[in-house]
Image (tube, rainbow, N blue to C red; front, top):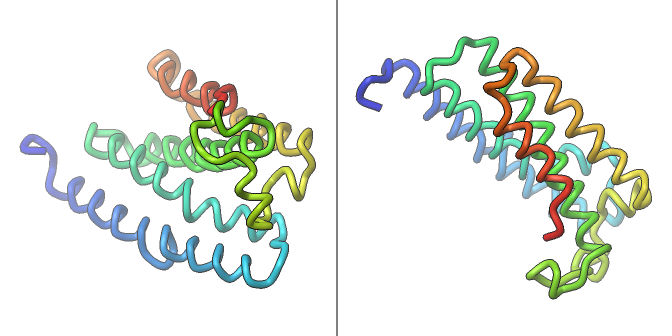
Amino acid sequence: TTDVDPSRVLDVVIRLGRSVGPKGLAGGQVKDLECEGKGEATLDELRWIHTHKTATLLEVAVASGAILGGATPEEVSACEQFALNIGLAFQVADDILDVTQSTEELGKTAGKDIDADKTTYPKLLGLDGARAEAERLVALSKESLAPFGDRAEPLLALADFIIDRKN
């Protein structure tokens, strides 16, 4: 970061701090624990939890790279939208894999969300509805990268991988 404007470095540090605080990872974890105790969460609560626990971390990572790389505020915003939607898609896909793959295929314990009676996207939307939601989120993430043209190819491939993965 020796050749990066110090104001950009400060912007990244501030964003990173926010991403783990009460409006980020910590807040998402608290809400997740609150919902575990009350039974089934609503779809809005589930999205809020995963926006703050999963998507926010991807959002700050992608935005940080864009900021330090010299992106304009509009480009940073497009990257943030990509990361937010891909982070949610990742979580939806993870919930789907938990009910459709074996422990051996996943490389971790399958069915743990059902065993813990956690609210998941397949539980709220059904398996087909959860798959449709993952595809919708990936489409939104790809749309946000349109301004980058061919330069976005690696991120577009990542978006496809998120919902095509088997573990």
